[in-house]
Amino acid sequence: DGRMPEVLKAIEMLVPKAEKVNIPIISPVFAPFSLISLSLVNMVNVMMWLKTDPDLYHKLAKKAVETGVIYAEALIDAGADTIFYNGGADGTVKLDDFLKISQPYSSEGAKKIREMGAYVVYHSCANVKHLLKDMADIEGIHCISVSQEVDMKESRELVGDKVALAGNVDPTYTLVKGTPEKVKEEAKYCIESGTDVLCPGCGWGPTTPLENMKALVAAGHEFGKMARLARK
Image (tube, rainbow, N blue to C red; front, side):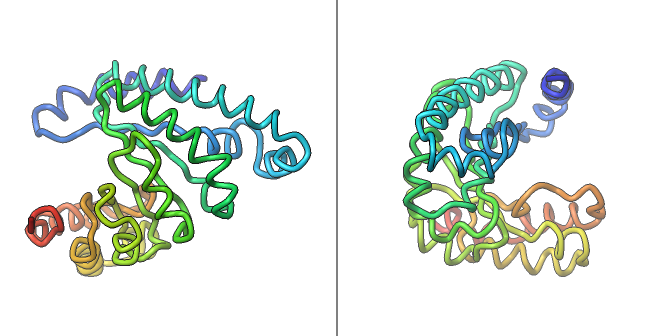
């Protein structure tokens, strides 16, 4: 669509700046179940299909894998280092459904993206505590981005050392509405509790104060030596 080419242009513009300061360029791609239920169709129709015409869903899911991989390839060619594979809709389903309609297609897509040389971070919105242990078995992913709805310490206990974890400072009540001191306090807790990549629990709110963004970065530098991998 009209947005995808603009994202590619933005990445190309950012590459020389990112290389100069040695930071990665991360770009999102919808995982198949989320692409279908949050973008292509809607959640109500998807839930109905799964009961009345599951073959239709699975046919569309295969096409969603292909679409996501093609877009990811374009992002990587433009200079993206990491693909943020967005499985935001997973939290709306129970474990049995996740294992049938999301995990296998996410595994297929993530493996192909990883083979292109990119890091793959799988994002989970909402409270996915009931899914996290099995989410860690998605093939091809390097990391799971955990939302603020799941405690980081509990998240680490659920996945063990299977994958890295990213997150999960609250993007609204802490980063948008909180103070720099609150940001650093929560960031320290996330690091001590097992996050490997300090970041918000979801996307940055557009009204996030710059001083809170800087506080999150400062917390990473200050408390990074306490991180799980740094202690090994």
